[in-house]
Length: 416
Image (cartoon, rainbow, N blue to C red):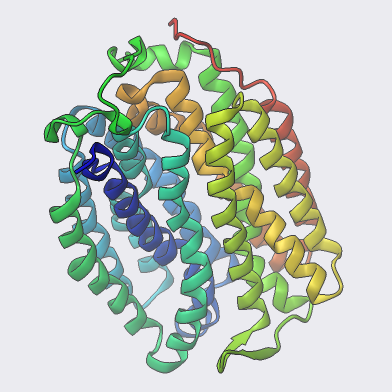
């Protein structure tokens, strides 16, 4: 049997894809579909519902600071298992809430801790442990789950809400974590290739860089210029992306794209289709930018990503036909799809896999505080009927990210 067949790294990638699909889908992509039911049952406003995700981003950042350091020192498999248990408790709890405050508290605690532990933060560290020369592509494929969940879940969950109710949908989500995700982690996840006598990328002979041999101090990250450039670039990107993506279904409805059409005998609302198409663009973006970051200087794919996101956002504000609207949804998705891949790849190239969990965690102190601000601004703009102007501001912020991202030049060797 060839060495390529024996290599287990791709199993880690596909497992990561499954985790990303579930965590992001349950927390982010399906949440806007619940808005009308939550407004009716809980008396929540659009601003309050947007605040749930804002709190999630804030408190998941705080959790990630500690989780990142733990992932660099201890078992990724153990962190993912504990994260899955906490995350499932959060999903089950949402099914029984009676007021908006309870929803906000759950998103700020159980979901905020369990989400990154089960999902992106742990998966990024796991994939980086198994890949080096192919890290960009591997991270991109693993992250496909993030956007693919937006393609599949809204189409499936929207009619399911009507069929069994939003509370029972959250019970289904929690059951999937317990019955499918946790057993998969226990059976498949292996922390490092060395545990199986293998090497990164499945290659026997490798040149190990000093970056992967030295675990840096916390102060080293904040002293590094490249740390700040990468963090600020993606802070602007997530600021703009979060505000637009979360409110895309509502924007689609407000401009009149709310009819239902039939595809393969399956009823699909126009705004759900547009939302899913943006996520499909994200799937393509993750593969595209994962490939490009392995081949080019990181600043080039970052700049391309920012231009696509900005073009998509501006296009969403002036499209009058559904055809053009869906084109710009896909373009927007193609841009934001590369964000998590490029951010992780940039930090991996700059600081090595030994520090990836830590640097990702601490970068969240810069990246994430801006993201809930963007969500809040757009949510408030919807309440004031100024959302088109808010979308345009998000497009301009993305261009600021383009300018900062052009400075991402990764040094060949890190020097604190």
